[in-house]
Image 1 (cartoon, rainbow, N blue to C red):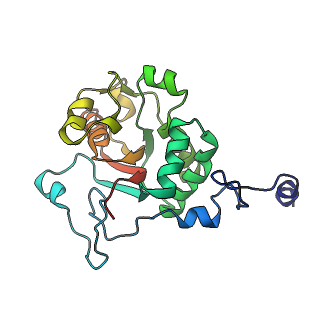
Image 2 (image 1 turned 120 degrees about the horizontal axis):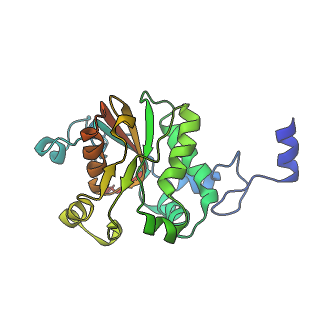
Length: 232
């Protein structure tokens, strides 16, 4: 009753186009512009395959080298409306987009069996420059939905790195090598961790974070990202 009254006084609008929307989500038109990843995918890294006729199987990259995480999943393809929303959220400081973006992830992945949520950290200089860590905002929202504890203090980015968006292939791996460290290893000992980031591009960042977490004693790592770079 109270919610309906508040909606009457303050109508819900889409944070992207300002059209009518429901419960802090994107409007139907904007949501229709998001390509959700529904499969088939690589069961390890979550890469979607071009052909919808394929069955799930390991991609070539995961066959050649097994990732340090158990499974990575992404809600949508990093194109169109989702790309625009992430850019406004991440680079233009429109943090009001966190809520509808979190809802997309939670709708795609309504439950999780991990024991601890950990966001990919920003270096202190980047955090000062941007004013917030977009992965932390996503992680906090998901922690509430999944009713899981969150640790955003013990995985540190100890070295400032170039923007990954400006790099390609092996340069991304080199850029993040040795960039992360664990402050208190006991925080991750024997824990099944859900690592949260905004975009999966080549997987360099989450791979490096996963290696560090495993060395700190994590029992296993799953990865959840909002978007995935894919040629679909």
